[in-house]
Image 1 (tube, helix red, strand yellow):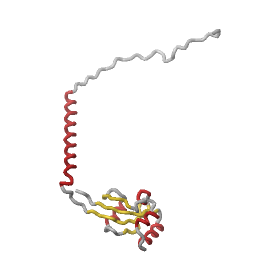
Image 2: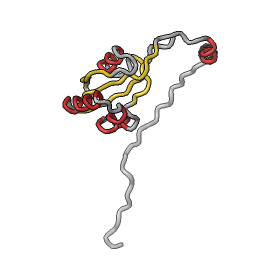
Image 3: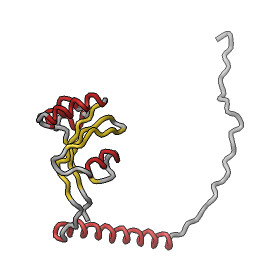
Image 4: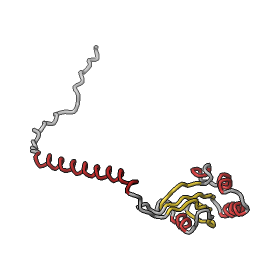
Length: 160
């Protein structure tokens, strides 16, 4: 199964007043990408017109995801407050959960099954080695401790 997937863009600002000004510009018809490029404080999306890319539920901040779930593609959210600041979100795309066709996933399934088989073979081999192993513990002979840790230093006579 492929989970529900979202693609969104956002404008992130640090205060509500700036978020309100951004919203006014968007309602007046300015492009989302232009406003995001000028006002957004998110360096990873600012240069891409605010585009976050694709994500599934659980990857982003809950408030952000909740706002995306309530939007239709092309719609703008209101101002959404999160721990990062104030967002204005535009949902770009929403893909419903769907089952991927066998043709699309069969190579992935084959690789996964082969890896599982290989792991089982390794585990059996290690288990066999353990049952055949003969472990002997030999105690090392006691090593006497040195009598003195001081190095012998030749004495100098005052006449030298």
